[in-house]
Amino acid sequence: MSEPVRSLTELLEKASSRRFIEAPAPEDLGRAEPLAFPFLSIVGQKEMKLALMLAIINPNIGGVLLIGTRGTGKSTAVRSLAELLPEVQRSRCTYGCMPEDIETGGMDAVCPGCARRYASGEPLTYLDHAHLIELPLNAMLEDVVGGLDERASLQSRTRIKRGILSKADRNLLYVDEINLLQDDIVDAILDAASQGNYTLHRGYQVATYRSRFVLIGSMNPEEGLLRPQILDRLGLRVVVKGLSKRAERLDAYRRSVAYKTNPRAMIQSYTESTELLKQEIAAARQLMLEVQLTSAAETYGLKLIQELGIDSLRADITLLEAARAYAVADGRVKATPADVRKVASISLRLRRSGMLQDYFVSLEKEEKEIEIMLDSLQRKKPARKKKSATKRT
Image (cartoon, rainbow, N blue to C red; front, side, top):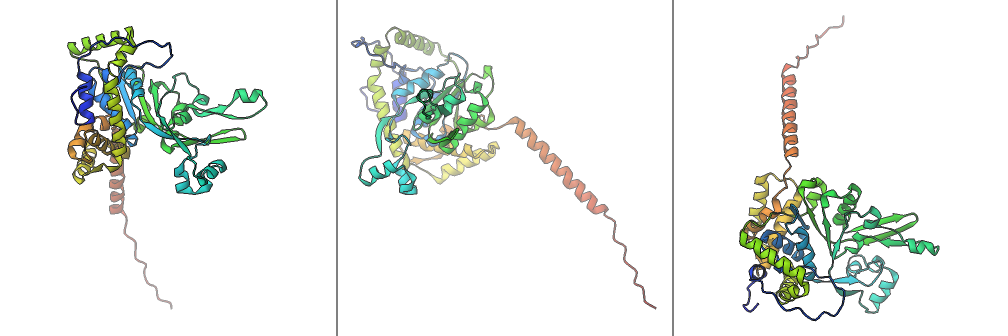
């Protein structure tokens, strides 16, 4: 990419639309390594790419739900995020002790080993790349939250094995076909996502794990709808449709064939732009603390939600946090009504329930009937007879 770019959003636009040219294959060293399709090589799907990028920049948005039929690139797009994820601080302790625990709860908030290391000036964390953790569709509840370690039990020891939710801490948790998950697994994900941690009881063994992750789900509505509880937890909602232009479909075909034929060469051709996008995302995450909403943006967003009749307060959080993320992605630290407008569709769609609207209309009608009946009975209430005064003789 020879021309300089002004902002992250401009980089995303230019890199994704540039003409694809096959590159010579690099030397094959025989190493097994994940070879994800380059994120910037995905043709079209601007809304999907924007939503995924904003969710990485600002985890407060609450994740992303991708809704579309088979073959529209949902899973490919999510898995391609692995190369864009920023670095995060991870605990060196098996209990997950962090410096902020001491800052908020004192030395008693961490294990004795971490308390000693903190007192001696040793670091409690190390820098590591965030990872994309996938939840298999056939996963059992014990795989998700954790369970007893079978290897330890063979040695007459009892030990708890970490689950997928614990491994997802400070990472991205991806659930494909999220609408087909078992109810108990959905409940576990919801609890962990809302609290940022969860406690596992297995016999007399008890362990508490951190579980702060960005949840990304994808689904095909032909296979079933998503439970309202988990739908409300997912911040941005993207409807992923097939490419409508012939030129885009032809370009997508050529890139797909090039990737299957020589994935390393395909990835190599996007190395420069991918690294630049990764740096821009990391810088945007650092700058998020400085981004502020103007009063006009707040008023505009809240009025929009009110006019649409959306009850969930998570809509407010998602909309305004997405507007902040869009502003910083565009190279600004002030989010305006224009930023709110840019993210309104992906933040507010599928927030209203027709069933609930009908229910509340019926409830309001019933309340009015009760009030009318009470007023009617009040008017018909017979007057009390006055007691006649009697004189004692």
